[in-house]
Length: 192
Length: 249
Ligand code: SF4
Ligand code: SF4
Image (tube, rainbow over all chains, first blue to last red; front, side):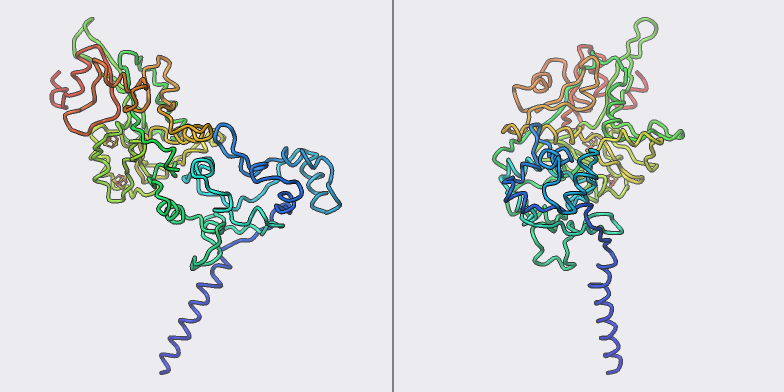
C-alpha cells in the first residue's frame, strides 16, 4: 500500500513537472517591439490582408511589411498613443525596419509557398492564421530555447488536441492537410 | 491545387561537342547550392562536386589525340538504384517532376546509395561546412546547407524550380515546361538545356530524340533523364565501356 502511494505520488509529480513546468521553462517569451492592431487596420483603414502582406507579381510573398508600407499612412502620428509616437520617431522618420518576431517562421529546409496555397489551392488566410487578422494586439513571441523555433509551430498545448488554426505548423500538420485535400506530399514540394 | 498542377518529367541534354571544359557550371552549382569551400585535405572523392566536369580522351597518340569534357551530375534515373537501397527513405523519385530528391535531413550517412549509384553522382560530407568569415553573406537563402555525416547530390536546382512554379502560379499558368538551373545559366557555350522531356515543345525533348544523343551506361537500365550528345563516335562509345575496357583503350 505504502509503495503504491509512493509510486502514485512520484508519478503525479513527474507528470506535473513534464506537462506544466517543463513547457514553461522550455519557452522564452518576449514582447513584440511595438504593438499592432490588426483589427483597426482591417476595419478603419479598410485594408485586406493582401494590402500589406502581398503576393508579388513574381509569385514571391512579401511577408511582414517593411517600414515603407507603414510610412505611407503614418508619416506623422495618427493619434496620441505611445505606440504611434514610437512608430514615427523610432522607425518611420529614421527609416529603420521594425525588428518584429515572426510567429510562423519555419526552419530553412522547409519551403512554404503562399501563392501555391492561396491562389492555386484557394485557401483563405484564416485557414492557417486563424483570427490573427482580427486581433487587436500582438501576443508575446515565444521561442523554444532548444530549437530556436516559434511556439506556434508546435502549438500551445503539449498534447496538441484542439489546437487553434494558427498554431500547429509541424510537418505532420502540413501532411494531414495535404492528405485530406488529396494534394501530393512528395519531399521535394516542401523542402529545399 | 491539383487543378493547375501538371506533371512534368524534367531532364537535361548536354552537348559534349560544345563543352570546352571551362568549369563555370561547377562553380555556379557550388555557389547556388551552398557547397562550402573544400578543406585542403579533400580529394576529388571526399570533396563535394554535385556537378563535375570530367575529361576523357580517345586514347590515340600524338596529333590524333582528341579530348572531350563531360559535365557529370546526378542522372535523375527513372529507375534510381540509390532510392531502393536507402534504409531511411531519404531518397525519393518525385512523381510530379521526375527529380530524384535527396533529403539530407533524413540521411543517416550509411552511404549505401553512394555504392549503388553507377555514376558517382553522390558525395558524403566528411567535414562540417565552413565558410571563410564574411562569405556567409553570399549563402543562398533558398537552399539549406548540409551538415557533416550526410550524403548530398544534385537536386536539379529544385529551389529554382520552386521559384519558377510560384511565378507560373501567380500568372495563372500550370507548372513551367522549363526553368533555368545554375549550371545551364552559367554555361558560356550553351552546352546544356533543361526541360520537360515529355513536352514536345521543349528544346530538351527535341534534343533528347536527336541523332547522336545517348545516355551514360544505358545498358544498366537506370533510364537516366540526363542525356548527352556528340557527333563524334568515339565519345559516344565511351558511354558503354566498362572500367576494364577503358583501361585497355
Ligand atoms: S545518377 Fe546516381 S544519384 Fe542520381 S538518380 Fe541515378 S543512381 Fe541516384
Ligand atoms: S547515406 Fe543517407 S541517403 Fe544514402 S542510403 Fe544511407 S541513409 Fe540513404
